[in-house]
Image 1 (cartoon, rainbow, N blue to C red):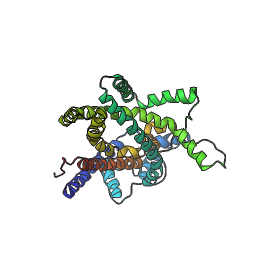
Image 2 (cartoon, helix red, strand yellow; image 1 turned 120 degrees about the horizontal axis):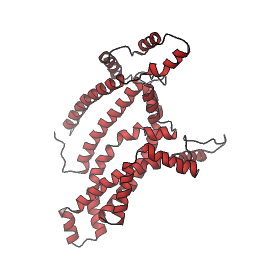
Image 3 (spheres, rainbow, N blue to C red; image 1 turned 90 degrees about the vertical axis):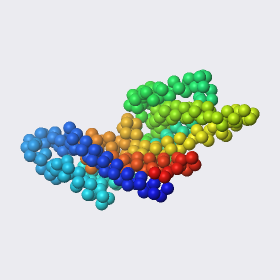
Length: 328
């Protein structure tokens, strides 16, 4: 086990280096950069020599280096724990990520819990009632949720529930409350603001997990030991929920570990549409501005979480299924 973990960590380092090269190269080759997007219009209004001023600022921000030279400068700082300073937010990238990660994590975690609570029972029910009303209904809703783009479905929900029906607030996480409002009042105000965005995230993601659970359950129900349990006269509910359900959950445990990056990355589109000040919205605005330090720091943060999540998935699979041996 220890030998396997060491090998995976060494492989992860190589993967992260490769990912960092690709991300840095793509960011530097973007058609826009921070200097051009932020200062060109200002220079034009003040009758400043635009090209000369842009070149001066590129030197100041370190954007005049070539891709290879710039990458190794960035890599040297990152290995020392310095992700650099954000051009757009004028603060350390690590500080911005830490300060805004909590909101995104809370929203994603709530959506994940609801997703599992809905998708797993629904997937098992659809499998046990194959080709029935529940199966067809769940399958249709799952396909709709999987096929709908986030921005399109969010726009429909905002128009219906916030504009037309005026049920849920459309923007931000808090309302204008009295100064003496109690803590519980403020807490429920935040919850009320998050119902719609969290509901959208759950609806769009629950379908794939439900179909995955349904497929696993059907595969388990056709196993020999399930037929043996039925032949011994065990009740159908006992066969399903005591014998089949346990083995259905084995692949889902590894899937749970794979959700680690999504918990911290933020829902970029959802946060942008609802004006939620999470890490996803910060990343969206930084990407528009061509903020290279933040884009690099954010994507490397996600890459590290992805590698950790993959390693945890392998280890958890070995824990829940004794037949799996991590020897290579």
